[in-house]
Amino acid sequence: MRSVRINLTPWVVPGRRIGVIDELRGIAICLVIFYHCGGVLGIENRVHGEIGVDIFLMMSGFTLAMAAPAASLRQFLFRRFSRIYPTYWLALGITLLIQYKIYGFKRSWENIWQHVVGIHGFSRLAYFADIVDAFWFISMILAAYLVFGLIRRHLENLSLVIAVAGFLTAFASYMYIWNQHAGGLISLAVRIPSFFVGVIAGQLLGRGTGELRFNLLLGFGLICFYYQTFFLSIANNYTLPAVGIITAWIGIRALVAKVPAGRFLLGATAFLGLISYEVYLFHQPMVRDYNVYFCTRVLGYTAPSFRQLLIGILVAIPLTLVVSWAVHKAMEKLFSLAGGHRALPEAAPPA
Image 1 (tube, rainbow, N blue to C red):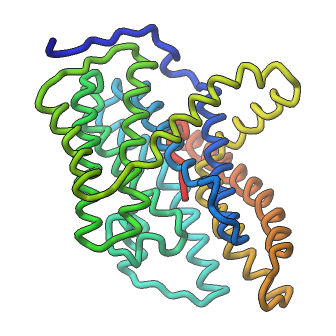
Image 2 (image 1 turned 120 degrees about the horizontal axis):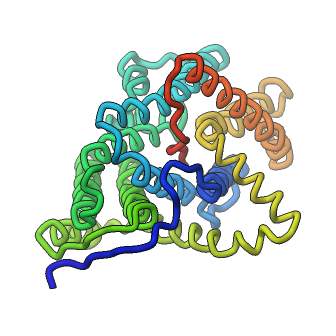
């Protein structure tokens, strides 16, 4: 037996918006916000809300695998990058302006242009989590889009997908270790498999076909993960728990939908999922930087207490939602006036 052919009844219809995807993105952004708020309040990281990043990556890979193979490479890249860049540039520009006005921060041109292009996550450690900590995710999702664009016509070959995932994970891990870049190693490299798990799931559940070939590609991919785990001493600890959360939510949502409070919860998480990318870009400075600034500079608290910071967070989160919804609608309006294609939100991250 040299291959295993997989034929499934497609679970979803390509081209249609899937409610559970938005709900899972909503859950993911809640986990990420909880993680960042916990950091502000000094709460021990027991829940590990950073797993929300991996849920985002899986949802991105899933939706791409269902919808993207039919488009040309040029169309695919344009649609993906037009979804990511305008909103990101707006958030980046606003953040740079506010940080300059209230903190007097002046950053190098090299730092700024790398953030504008979105390659700062692959650059020096000082740029990785600068300006806004979570902006490293932009580098990762842009790279994922580029790689996906190159293999999108061959997703049925699951061995190829595994080989690409294994190689990129091992290569990124090695390069970050070689450059003594801890941020890239623990935040970016170990999350690469999550995106490709989503790609495989999207191919099997969205298109219903796949073939696992027992060949050099499959062996190469698995050896890469072996190399990463046993030679680089790095474990991919986020991917499996993220799969567990996704599976659990799909399993219980039918029960949740049977009661009014549950239906409200489904609607709320779907709404959050709709604007999750915008929330991701804007929330961290709101709950942390501007919160601390307001407490110390405006209210005059030398060392803000847990209660004072918590009140600030409870104010900052609704403001973030309002800003995110406004930006989301503005971008939709911009794309409709330009006659462009407004892609479904496929990225929105992390920690």
